[in-house]
Image 1 (spheres, helix red, strand yellow):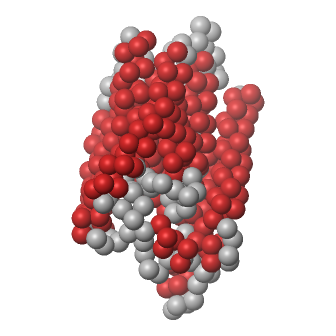
Image 2 (cartoon, helix red, strand yellow):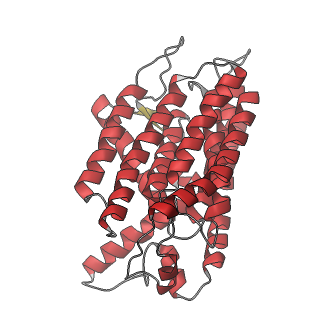
Image 3 (cartoon, helix red, strand yellow):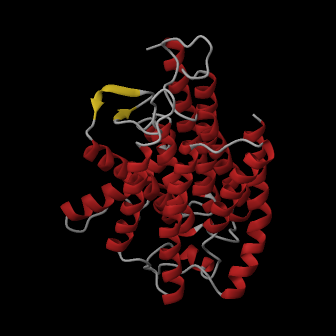
Length: 356
């Protein structure tokens, strides 16, 4: 448990202290956020607020993981390194998007095709590598089955479909965090809860692992490196928590696509490696609501030739245009996120208790 505690504490302190330095550097260089003119007018006061704060989150997580292993003198695992690769790779795509917005002084960064291509390349490399590196039991970080609480035995996929499935999960999770990151602290706070949940899931799977449990029974988990995945998960939760100090209203810095795409990728990686891919829909229920509000809005607009369900999407902007205070929206959405996380953890534990 020492490695887990060290990683969480160091990641939290790194973003808590490092973000302040990042704000100074970004302000001095003029790397401020551009605000859409068609968005809520209350956001116009945020124009110029430093962005690309996700760089601090990425650096904090990588440093915390490395240092916690050096302090405890333990070797890194293939699963953890792959999640960190996905986390960092999508962060690079997000950074390019943010940097182009700032340097070109426009609200559009990477072209949609270039952005999708970048995400796809990282996802394909991750998917291929995740099916390698079997341990002594032949368990690879990812599996060729779709999973809910464990692998679903009758949902076996050939390699091509596994890659497509992984790409869809990564795209859904990264865009989910990206769309949620529209109000001060909203995405960071939600990610703290979800990564906190995955910390508990990984610790539980480690304690009930078929590899580490002395009397492994039918309830044990066939997963690889659950302990080290818990180290990554707690580092991510701690980094988001420390960043939230500066990102809460009124935000002194935004995570930008650098942060949102990388965090979404890490969520997908956690779901894939813990064999809880479909459970992520529940744990990340708030992200699902945000994405579906955009899908419904766009679909309804096209079908009805101009009519809208919401005043604006994602849905948090709808409530802003109903004159809800931003802090009220964030707090209530955090409550919703917490309820989904609690429900997801309850389902995860109930399955083990019931043995179903």
